[in-house]
Amino acid sequence: MSVRKSKKERIRQHIKKAKRSFSDIPIWMCIVFILFGTVLGGVFAYDCLYLGQIIDREDAIVATGVFDSYEYSYSPKSGAVSEVQINFIDRNALYFDAYHVEMDEKLEELERGEKLDLLLHPNSEYIWEMTSEDEVILSFDDAKSRTQLEKSFFGFILVGFCLICASMGMTSLCVKYREYKKSLNGKH
Image 1 (cartoon, rainbow, N blue to C red):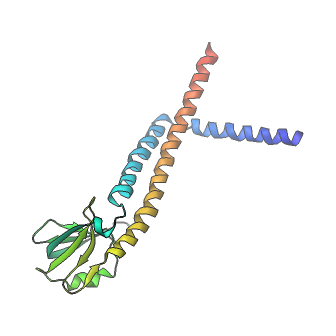
Image 2: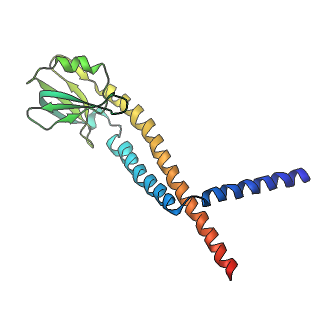
Image 3: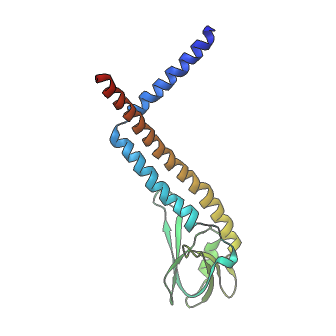
């Protein structure tokens, strides 16, 4: 009997300690957590669910373009290629959604004025397939599998993290509000 009471008492102490830790967070930080979590979580969810939506070949936009040049953008922290911009003579620049290193050699072989056939994602207009007269630079299946891995896995981890931050802020505000209500009831 005393063992059960001690377990119950330990659980109550643990709950009190958790409430204290949530009540120790300043209100401004709770609001930052809520804003950070909901805004960034919404942006990442939009990116994963709409812009990075996995599509079938028939849903892609068929386009052509006359190649001009390409440019790499590098991540400042890792130095790795973060984005590849393809410039065209007859249309606005487009970007790859699924760049991989094996494409470098194929991009170097492209000549200015060469006609490229493209399949674009309907929501983001990222290139999901690019072929020249001679070869496939990016296949649709490659883009689809890379996007599935990157957008699905990493995107939903970021969305989950942001939602956890928002829920921590909300929980902390609720604990603070309950303590405030208790203090008002105790004064009367």
